Amino acid sequence: MESGKFCPPLYLQRYQFVIDFVNKYNPKKLADLGCADCSLLRKLKFHRCIELLAGVDIDSVALREKMYTLAPLSCDYLQPSDRPLTIKLYEGSVLEKESHIKGFDLVTCIELIEHLQLPEIGKFSEVLFGYMSPAAVIVSTPNAEFNALLPGLTGFRHQDHKFEWTQAEFQKWALDVCRSHGYAVEFTGVGEAPFSTENRGFCTQIAVFHKTFGSDKQLGTDPEEELHAYKLVYDVEYPSLCDHKIFRNILVNEVIYCAGTIKTRLLESSEDKETLPHVCLASINTSGSKEPLLMDMGTDNEPYLEGNAIYIPLAKLLSFPKVHRLCKSLLRLKEVLLETSQVTLSSDAESLQLLADSVDGCDLEDWEGCGDAENNETSGSSAAYEEDWDEELLRQSFQS
Ligand code: SAM
Image (tube, rainbow, N blue to C red; front, side, top):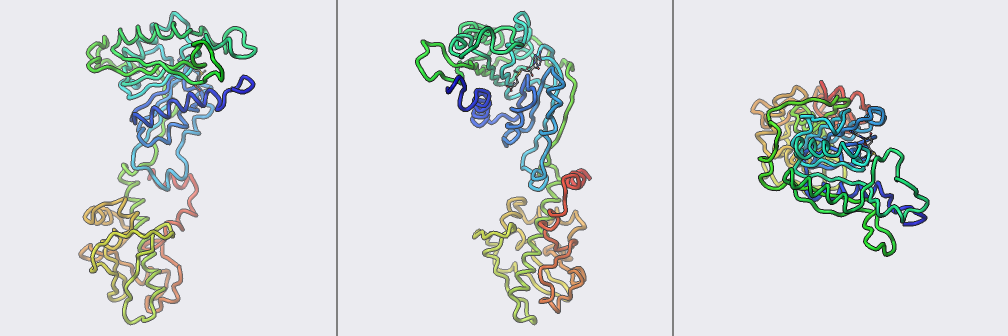
């Protein structure tokens, strides 16, 4: 603590505490109560375990101010995640029961409770632990005993604080909650004084609650009861490979890119235009960098020329690491490619067909003239598409 300031700042230490907890327990559904301008949510959205992220605040201005910063970025469309992610923001009071926030894996209440009136704390505990009944809860609040160490502070730390608890007061509340609602609690905190503080504790005191086994039975609320007191103000779904259309788009683009790479290699290594050369793929990957790994799919998977077309066996395409990462089996690859008109398959659907006419007017007889030119229909590189895509186009593309 330097000149009365913590390093890193106390609020970042609180966020980091939550992030460490998330990294340890991998919650899928997380709600941040009293999320204000969504600063913590913005950090949490990068955590791959989380599939549903909800924020709740009574202050709609704070909530709306930066809610669009939770929107997906271009990179989220270009490289959709394996997991789904939905972010929802609700305007509402934590003193109201809301079915949409029931049964979460983790609920965080960071510097929230001291903004409630003391007589409201009982209702808050009942709503949070009794009704929402999450598997784990993190509650942080100022430690009043630490205030004497904060230079120049008189009264509460913030004008909107209705109370600030000592460690004993906080712990009494938390232990009562555990008894009433079937939770176990551990006490900790962030913000340590740089000198001996005679058990004054942390600047921010934190209680971590875990629901104990079988405590669902103690709930007094009818589980079927649907209560909606919150107003949904923001709802965004991230592009994810779990969405079949998105998965297909990404896979097809990758296949097109790989086919283009194979063709380019063919052109480069073709001294003898009479016979089709075998392509050395050992150092090709789709990002253009060298990557030694190619799946060994046997020797019958080389591209071949028939009439006016190049045929690239799907097994060859599946040997590209990124295609393989997206699509583990040949059967699945075939099924997905058969769904789209963006590529043409051979009659037995075992190979991708690049038609001579579709190679930007370039005759296969005259390969050297082709250079890097690729046709969008059958062999365009996804990198070329990417350059043209602005964020709006990307959105439209994935929504269509
Ligand atoms: N948790 C955030 C953080 O750590 O950055 C912000 C905490 S801010 C000090 C307290 C927030 O609690 C405010 O945004 C306030 O609007 C919200 N709040 C106060 N009473 C509330 C209530 N009854 N229901 C929901 N939110 C409430």
